Length: 361
Image 1 (spheres, one colour):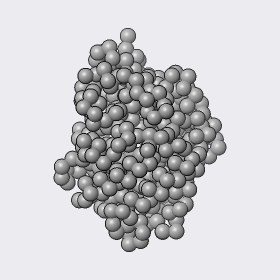
Image 2 (cartoon, helix red, strand yellow; image 1 turned 90 degrees about the vertical axis):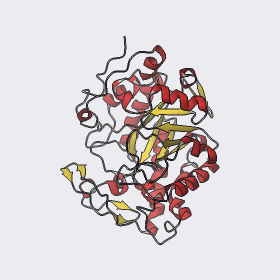
Image 3 (cartoon, one colour; image 1 turned 135 degrees about the vertical axis):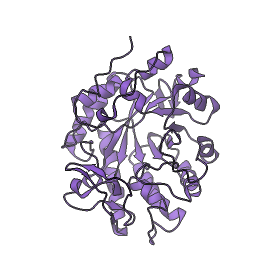
Image 4 (cartoon, one colour; image 1 turned 135 degrees about the horizontal axis):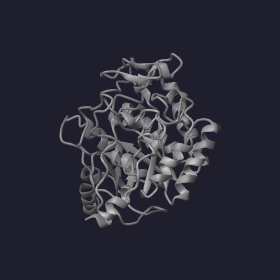
């Protein structure tokens, strides 16, 4: 069962050593200036045996910021420092895509010089608050983006995609999941606009469609991916018409010949339970290209998904934190190290809980 998961895979014109992807993992090691650093290069290169690494979510502009010490890709200095990270991965034999991120309503005015976070509509996240540079604070009601502002959002994605190319990445993944800006435009729970970007399934897709169209003018389409979370409840998401919405979205994305479609399909945590889960088999009914599954997979379930044809690749997140040599452990049947403590996941502790996990003997 595991052999196909661990076998080489041609992702269009990109030769991957195996079908195991390292999921994007926000780790908060970039510092307040949001500039990548040497310890990040070490971290990613340690995990370069993954068939494909997807970088931690990386913000496309200052307005997109919404996580303490996460990196950006909107200044020349950021580009220069990302070059060292990419080079370290390539030198270790790996491939890496950059995930492009706008946090949208999940941000806070503490990140934005006092400006409110933005979203499709003035609908705040219902939850226990968010972590800001000034500590944990309640979620704010976002400012609805004006229709005239949306071309500027698209342009920010284009600039970020161009910068990722200049930094040497192998491709980009557009983050349209987990309640961040693009996902909040897709979903009826958060998008209650009455302009051409809301009010119908087709209109709610419009912004993502414009972003993908624009980014595929910077990169070949087969080096551009999109991430979706049709089952996700993170950031207070989950819409009653999720099946209709995401079936339409995926069928539209099918027209681009993308690198892959990254679908948060797993139900290990965070399922909104508004109906039957949107499965990889459902995706395959309307999507012809490579599919990457994610969320709660273990080696056996990942191998099963690939063997059945439901997915071409499976992304692993938490296991890669404490197992930099995850692929080797899978291949050799070596027990995985325990999950790292959650308090080490995001905190700026340098090497602790980040690059200090040993490879198996």
